[in-house]
Length: 374
Ligand code: HEC
Ligand code: HEC
Image (cartoon, rainbow, N blue to C red; front, side, top):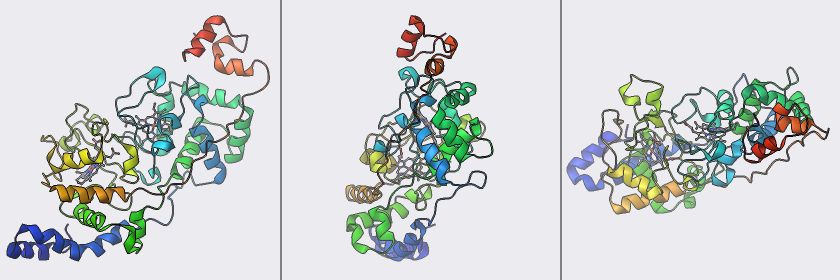
């Protein structure tokens, strides 16, 4: 898979191993660069094509805590644009501060994603979007009552009718609107992109050497391939925890035990701590892990070999990873449709059990403590 591999090997034999990277790089760099051009447009599926109305509605839903059982947690609570659409925590917190089992992944560039979640258990963004709302540990919403609850907000009724003239507010359309918005979240132009497009001075020499390492000796490209730096595949990279990841979905496939989805490396510096369990705090720790810090076991990917990088090579690779930080657009917090001003309607939404009558003191206490009123 090395470009100019044969020439590099001949060179290695004659001159010794220390100079082969330079040789392969000199031959390969221009060719490798062609593999990293940004796509011209965002792909939207035929079943859920882009419209501005759907995307604007999805933006509101994404940041609306009223989608959760407690009315307190939105998608954006965990997928926070300030942390490159993650939450900056080793693993996040959901309903009633439940500590989650895995780190919140970014939704950046998810338009190009294939299977969703660290273990790939959802097949599309549309399907995924309904997952966290229903999950007790995340948003703890009753999926059958969410449509009713949103329908009680007049502004949403109008927005759904505009975005989906055929059927308006349905559970599927909630998923479609959110997914459409998510697909618009694309990493901005980074120094790396400017370099790929021909601006030689956009990257330092160290970062350029790092790019050569990335594609050759360090073998990152085996999994973090293409402009979005992911093959959308699942691999065990030898993190020592007990979570078997994709192994829960594909129980009998040896190589899928402890395998997790390859994350994008776009804007990666903004998303520490790293990995599905948030166990590596810095990019330096990540590089040390790949260099020779991983657990050997049957499921370990065949692409994982001790790299034995020198300190200079590690610094070059890090310099390269830092060039992947793009100038992302500001994300505005959307103005949300207001609750119905009709007396009783709001109370009914907050404590449906009270049937719109005045809230009992017990229900009020339950609500303030983010519990449902029984
Ligand atoms: C309490 C925190 C939390 C909330 C709230 C939350 N998520 Fe997530 N999200 C996560 C975690 C954790 C994962 C990964 C779980 C796993 O893989 O097992 C995830 C995974 C995802 C993924 C998959 C990303 C990928 O690359 O595979 C998408 C997309 C996503 N969430 C969107 C949403 C949407 C849309 C909402 C709101 C409806 C939402 N999330 C609400 C924490 C949260
Ligand atoms: C065998 C495939 C494979 C190879 C080779 C590989 N990676 Fe990864 N990488 C992954 C997978 C899979 C994950 C997620 C693992 C997990 O969380 O369990 C990951 C995670 C990461 C993360 C953390 C991302 C995040 O959001 O938490 C960084 C950074 C990273 N890799 C950089 C690199 C670099 C740099 C190299 C080359 C030295 C490299 N990777 C080589 C598959 C690979």
